[in-house]
Amino acid sequence: MRRRARLIFHRKRYYDDGAIAELTLWLVPGPVRGSSHSFKYSLFYGRAGERLVAYDNEPGKGDHRHYGDREELYRFTTPDQLIQDFLADVRGARLGADDG
Image 1 (tube, one colour):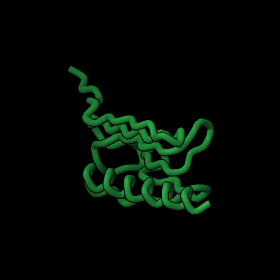
Image 2 (cartoon, one colour; image 1 turned 180 degrees about the vertical axis):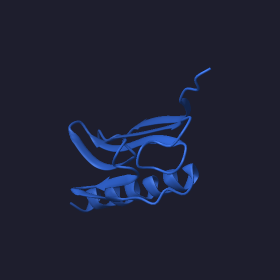
Image 3 (cartoon, rainbow, N blue to C red; image 1 turned 45 degrees about the vertical axis):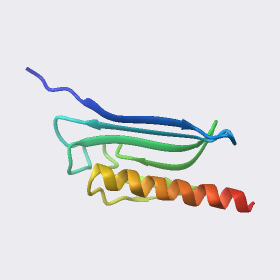
Image 4 (cartoon, helix red, strand yellow; image 1 turned 180 degrees about the horizontal axis):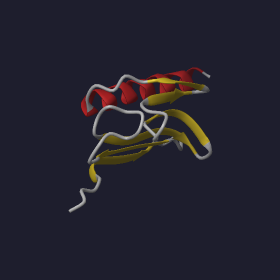
């Protein structure tokens, strides 16, 4: 019997200013190519057509994050820490947007 990915977390939030945060995390049978853990994730914050913050581990690229125009490696430890790090970046992006 073949094991499948299992959705373990999904949240979507719509902000009053039109921004959206969507967090999706799956438990997968084995590591995604480029990662060393059994999770597949896609965490997004932005607006229509504009990615402001994102964390993901697409096959071949492994764990990484996008913050504005930057893309950098991300050191995955636990799902809880992943979500905390993402939400901290979202808070920073939202505070920066208030400054403009």
